[in-house]
Amino acid sequence: MRRAIALSILLIIIQFLIGIILYPRMPDRIAIHWNIKGEADGYGSKTLGLFLIPVIEVVLIPFFIVLPRIDPKASKEKMMESYEWFILLFTFYMSYVFGLSTAWNLGYRFDLLRLLIPMLGVLFYGLGCILGEVEINWFLGIRTPWTLSSEEVWRETHCVGGLLFRVSGLLAIAGVFFSGWLSLGLAMVPVLVSGIYVIIYSYLKYKQITMERMN
Image (cartoon, rainbow, N blue to C red; front, top):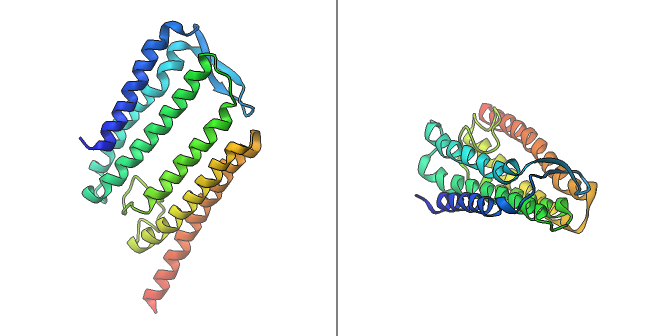
């Protein structure tokens, strides 16, 4: 088993163990949702609050692992290393969310959104690093009709997309210095704009390459 997958499984096991250990200490109903101000505004059973995130990971991780094995386009050996780091990055982010939620329900009070947004930035930055290494496939990356039709368009689009996602990640990390809508805006607006831009870029790049080949 590769290291990134092993670490992902270890993180999930740790979450389950923490949930089991802390279960007797938790009230019957605990916070499971917070508003833009970082205030708890949704509650559920402690079973749901402690085990929902690791259960989601248990369901998704095997699905993630199987995907490249059924994709006829994926270059298995070259893809798997980057893809497995994506799985670890996702699991680490979910573990962080689990940790914040658990700490809040243990009585620690903090601006949850202000701590969550920077880690979202780390996730975006990590995805940006991975995008530059991902080869053409049908399940991970910037999958448009134009990137999937041309390896050159795929490569150029992911080079640009990787840079934009890294910049978006850094802007989101800067959200730790702000709160409320400004913090959320720093996290979401750049990545949304980047997502729209790379779709348009892939189309224009495909047209450019097609025209060059026709001339």
